Length: 381
Image 1: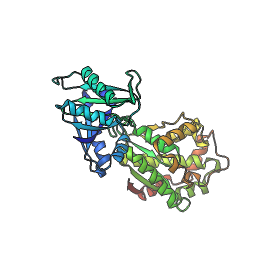
Image 2: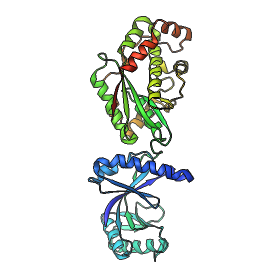
Image 3: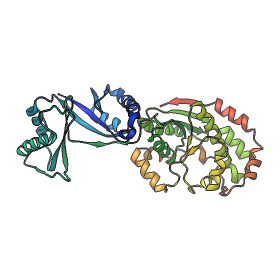
Image 4: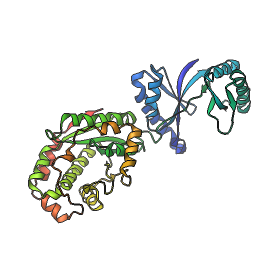
């Protein structure tokens, strides 16, 4: 007998003949998640198992954050030939439970002498005899004693929900424009959940933005990396570009011209990362640079598609997702990012392209972009 985790997957089940590809990817991501705990991960008979970990609670926490995992069940593996021992262990696992319960039995080994209804009926009877605090409710029980008869017998009561989605790397690559705010980590998480491997670009304007602000962004990347299985973060020196824009461009257009620079640089980084799209945390109308007109002007400077998964979210909805994924507290730390530097008093909400191009004509754009890309600091978290 040994303790292990039984890992359930969801959407992968629908993948038909391509399912083995997704299963191998999910096993690989789970191995990455538990490697520091010494966990052993394997696939058997349509189930993924994790064993030999040093800390059960931490192993459960890490595996539930892996995209593609639907739920995690701390389970006990036993020899299936001794049904009395199996029932004794089930009784022990139900000792502290109160309220209603049922037994759910699954038998993939059809040679087993008891079928699923017989297993459930007999085990449920023995649990009832041993625990006077339980009553049977087969429709909506508070507790479920699960027993699976495969090459071994697996028993579990607790089912811990996980993030779901698809295994990272099964749906291409994209590059996230990661600020220190609330929105962009949520956007990156949502796209990564669909199986997209993300890298990140952060624009750092030292000394106007501090090293604490940069560390805050790296902390956000570390939180995301638990689900994304590691993230490469490109720290772009952005001070010179912002100073040039501030000195030479119309004040009401400085934020928008800055955003257009960011998109150009992010696309260059994305190509280095073999990414196929950019990701931003923009939401329509949230700030002046996120009106429909303004978003169109930033789209114009890149060829790649731009994914904006929170485009229709209210701020409160974005905050709720940030709280759920664990980035809200870090995003709320009061360290400035480059978007707060040289903010115009009255930014243009319906910008005119001729004014934008006039402002950009005063800048040596290619030289500024080349210098910024050459100065990138690459960090892996």
